[in-house]
Length: 513
Image 1 (cartoon, rainbow, N blue to C red):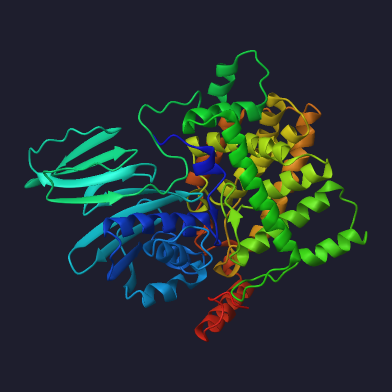
Image 2 (tube, rainbow, N blue to C red):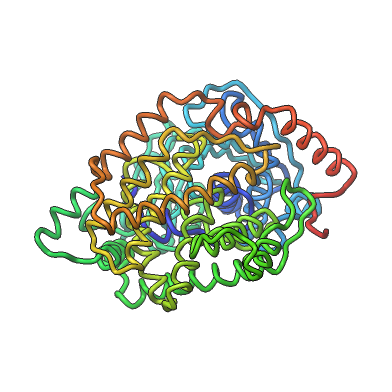
């Protein structure tokens, strides 16, 4: 089982694009595929299963943009990403994208066949949510890569020695030869190889041998601390110190860096964003003006939260820099709520970071038991998770106890079960904006309820399991395929048609407007 990291799986990556499941994960898959080809690619075939989510979403939700950027070796926050298709062609890489009938069990499955002048390789990988991915096979050989290791692949004669100083060495019989997969914190050499490939890690927090964390569920955490009333943010620090081999100050400093990125993005969103290929225009600036003039209903700090949530969503939709927290589609609820409330309370960036760490630990429990991917669980996996995380964060800002933070997280998630994913015009903007605002508002309400001693009744772990069970009964059409809900209304289809017409005229993909 992959051991979740707050900075790998929950708060991050720092990225551009409409969807972390699509764009950031696809970029990481592309980076590994590029390494497999030693940086030289002349042709790539991309195949998507007809029954998955990608045939209807790969272009509009950033899979193409991310994958192409990864094949070119770019980072997830590279400002050139909107131009990645043109850059791929300029690099002389021939591209084909096909929809096939393969019955892939995971809705976000990428099948790549790559060529250069010397060789051909295939790679199958899946996006698992929030920018995380997993390689399932290379050249038809089953294996596992999550991007946390330096991976050395050695094709060697059958029976060749497979002893290396490494975290893990896996040998697979190929009949005529063997494939040796070496996972380590550095690449290894071999003098018996028929061929050797080196795939660099793509995650910010690496994996390592004998990795242990103090707990992986809410129940385990409570058992671990016993009668101690340790604040949730301190437990998050303890967890991430074990996961990433960090000091306490390093964990807090890493989160402060993320807070500063988010505050900068909020300011840029309020100042104004533009991008042709989007559903909603810039709206947060007008909200800020109305709020400053006292022309909105008195929502207290909630109005600032709505402003910041809107600003972050607009930055995302204009290909600006955001942080998937826990996903790009739900990137605004948690940071918008935390930063707005902390500013209203005159709290510091360190206070914000501690609140975000509390949220991150709630996210660890969710990601370990389930998923953040809307393609698997609907928007309850994204918006529901964000609300739950934000509620715990807000209790932390208020100086509430660990148990109050857990109660808030449970109540916030309970009220989001069953939420579908139905992006209008196949863009991750609406009703995503409203759902992010709802998640943040829900978080604030549940935080105050928990601070007042309201009983959540159902423990958080059981709520997560309930959401997972709901997702298993949710129709495919309601899980981020653009085949149900608001996505299929006449107005949504008309907006999609108009945006497609703009693109066909050469507008909307360059981000120059």
